[in-house]
Length: 195
Image: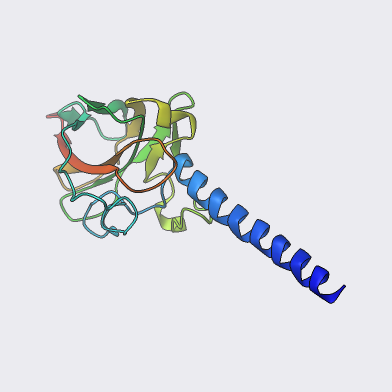
């Protein structure tokens, strides 16, 4: 009877333990933690974080890019696109932020549709500080099936130009594991339009 109880406890422990691991692995498809864009002041990327690190950063054959206007008007929203091309990966993801020339995180992001999400400070799994609310955007769970994402960024009323968008992207083989995936980084600069 005592051995049976120990066996039941062991089985229950393993089920809970492996359930947590599985949920953690699957949760990454819903977006990485904050501060992994490769921007100054961030924590590197998912490659440097020891997660998707089978290959060195930017070593894959895909192209990862940001398409944005070259100028902004203070306080106005504009559309930005982040995209993979020439990619054979089954799943894709990204994270982006914007810094001005003084290294301040500037502007605010807003999703369009359901393939992106703005990281919320209330999401404890992402680890975003309240001061950085609306400063980071990434793919959503539905967004991993896409190779490109479009969203809005509203420029600040005041910033030191140029503003640089920093994005890190992951090209995954889609098997639910972090190995054999490529991580890329890219940037794009934007300045205030002339009055």
